[in-house]
Image (cartoon, rainbow, N blue to C red; front, side, top):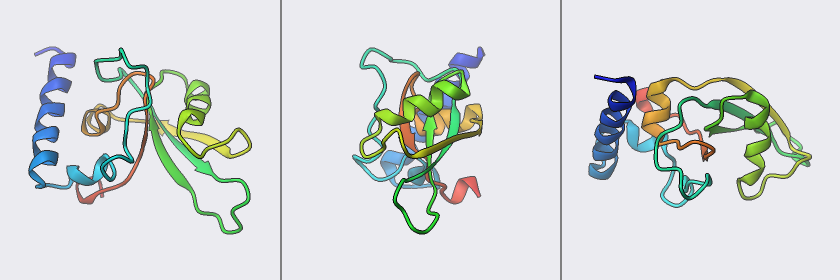
Length: 125
């Protein structure tokens, strides 16, 4: 089975779990509506790679980092792409922490160029 076909199979399995409400995968995509895809509308396939980006909001007194999954090849592109997510501004501190695994990309349903909240669920701990 090719790597792309394997990702689709994993994504389909995770989507089925998410729809049925069973398993830790339901937490990975965030709450309904919050994890809306912000990538190009014609991007139909999962991202080949992605980054976990940490964001510290400007004006927050306490350090309350937010984490996002971004479907880009380059860390710098990921730090810029995060600005498409509602509520984030250029002045927010953005740091690409690490590459996402294929399993994370599939579980999140992350598309090329997409930005999604990264919320840890029971299956990720």
